[in-house]
Length: 79
Ligand SMILES: [Zn+2]
Image (tube, rainbow, N blue to C red; front, side, top):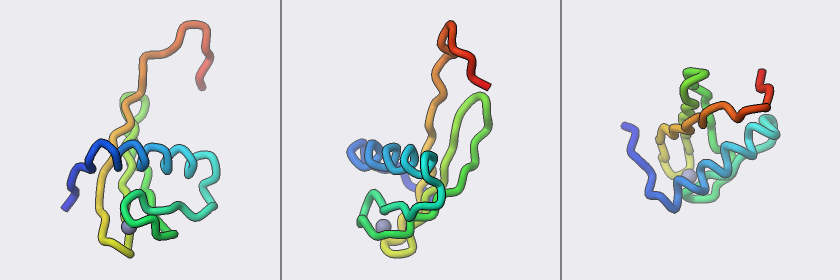
């Protein structure tokens, strides 16, 4: 039962995912209802794409977010 998020919420969701990746042990706020305790499951298929399943128990959000991986930047050395 995964539904696409509207673009405005998608931007928020991507932001929340980025924050979660920085600090995976900090509580994450739901992009929809702003409740604390958003569950994020990394389902990525690297190196092609990153997938995150977002689940919010407060509002019932159940979304899968695709974070496309850009082409490698010349000169960068990503492990
Ligand atoms: Zn929510």
